[in-house]
Length: 136
Image (cartoon, rainbow, N blue to C red; front, side, top):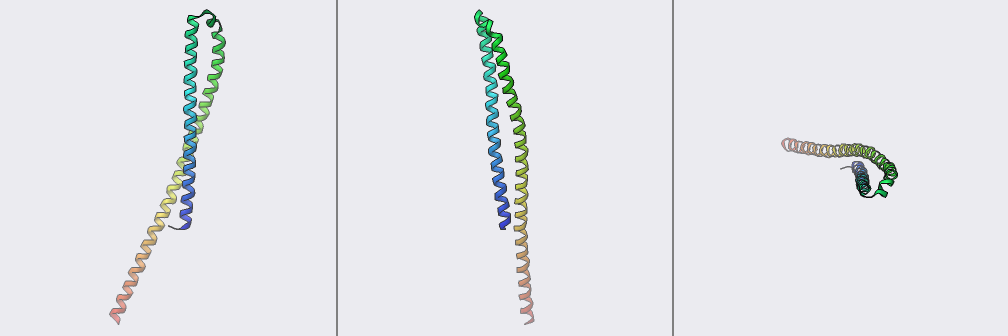
């Protein structure tokens, strides 16, 4: 493999690995945001149940739900942002992987062409040796 092909493949591998790490970070953040939404829903259900049992809690339920809606809206907004980031990261990773495969293909074709050329030179050398032996 030529030095330039090796360098391009190393750079492309680094880019793919970096994008894979970024995608893993985004996926982790997304899972955390989904968990936060689930916890918020569970907390709201607990407060509703408490309001059914306790009259004082029932009076404060509306205020709690107002704050809960704001927190849930922020968490849902974070999730939408993370979904967009994840999609972009997946697209970038797909593109980087495609570029890596192109470089690997070019390097492999260069290697195979070099083998074919060496074979042709060897055949030509043997042909010349045969002609000299026949002539001489």
